[in-house]
Image (cartoon, rainbow, N blue to C red):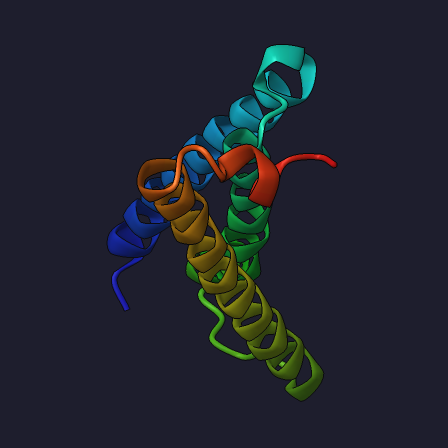
Length: 121
């Protein structure tokens, strides 16, 4: 109900959102442009950054718009879409983190088999 707090909320979330967009975009650009970083670990980090971009873009823009325009309404289809995308990105991110954990396990505990198990052949 306080307009000053709504504007503070908007600017705070905008700053966090832009920092996340800039950071993830920078990670994606560096990994895609540098051929020395085309290894399984950086491939997983690239995908994690893409998933994080989708994950943060699911909820934050609507929250910022609601705060800026003092509107709390959302359509049924918008709610279903937001819930589906939120669930999809959350599950995909957890699955990718599980695969990344297995990658590190193989690299640390079975270093001689790492190239065989996760190599490009």
